[in-house]
Length: 235
Image 1: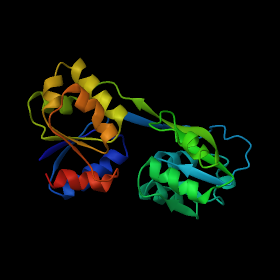
Image 2 (image 1 turned 120 degrees about the vertical axis):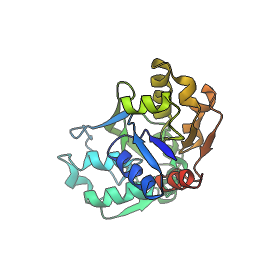
Image 3 (image 1 turned 90 degrees about the horizontal axis):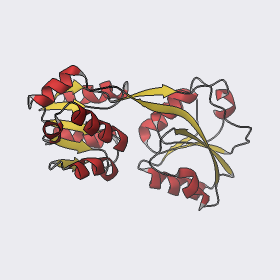
């Protein structure tokens, strides 16, 4: 199976390596580029805990001049990979929700920290601060990274789609799926781009592809890389 991996680097290369280890041929086609805002204004605090919904948040705060103020605080993360990245950054008390945003909200709601610093991306699919407020938790959201759209499909990826040489495409975010469709349409190959099997991290990620008319879509059992790789490899 030849799979197109549209994930931003460096995560795209890791996903590609895991797919290749499962017998897939992989083409890398990152459609977004991550930028860290390592001088983001965090505010004065004080905070009782930190929340992260992406590995990119841990990467960004690792370079922040105020990191040492934060590492003694407990951290709540959406999944295990983000938890691992937080520990690697220097946080010791890290708890993972092992799921999606709603699982993280429930975790924070059970712990009920007096105040929460949410290290977030510029674009977010949910409202963590608003949801934890329903549990009596005040969250201060600070944008520490952003995803920048990459211009055009890589030539090798476009050629493979045009020739029908792609069996499957992985999609990790709703925005990434939308950019995939936009770039394919601009290249005049939208029908060819819709034809492969589309492997999506969640129903929200699949939604733009469904709306565009893709007929072969599969959604991972859990919204994490391991589940998506298993989905592709078992096809």
